[in-house]
Image (cartoon, rainbow, N blue to C red; front, side, top):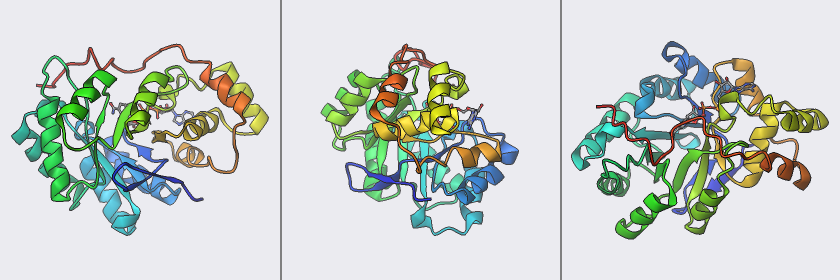
Length: 277
Ligand code: NAD
């Protein structure tokens, strides 16, 4: 299986399919990430907030895979937008992961009420300049947050990681990202499982002799987004990576896109202001 890559705005290649690690049982995380590597995934998405960077790092070490064949993302936790806090938190991430660099470091949430994401971005720019993150980006940024980063920063974010799935197609935000050379990463690509019982998706899956999860993930890939579905079930980890022997025709793509109903599984970025302090 060969997973295609997308080239970020600084020339770094990111595998379009990764493995999500939010809410994986901590004791099982190392083995599940190793299962994912065995199934062909080469990209893993973690965060300081998930409290599993150490276990992800253990899997990277145990895999025996060359570091330059793996793509590791982590994210700045909400309590650390102050410049020095962000630098120190990043150091702790590298230590927990057991790595000398990450491939991508993101601001996890903009926290608009606190309004310190520009300060955090300046810290990420320093980390990027030091070479300890091969790319930097943001997560859960709306266009009005991104416009400020573009105006005040010196580095254009490489990615914007936001909630996207058939019930929340996010076409406007994705178009904004694309216009500015920012790759959209679709978090909760399966809507945390909510979209899998949809009859339209079920019908498309039957016709292609695929599972609903494979059809939804294929829809994301054909739209050009990066995805990292999460599963704690080994068979599903394998299933979610078998996306490359088929193609959805335009009418199936349109039928799935038409399911958009603006339905979020997570917080709205304008209202999420929990710093965790
Ligand atoms: P997801 O959309 O990947 O759904 C995961 C759930 O779907 C699983 O728990 C399971 O119940 C079900 N599932 C998975 N594969 C299945 C299959 N083949 N068949 C049937 N059911 C299946 O949800 P997620 O974990 O919220 O999102 C994926 C990743 O995105 C996370 O693990 C994390 O890395 C990232 N994420 C980022 C943010 C952010 O704020 N940046 C927020 C949420 C998630």
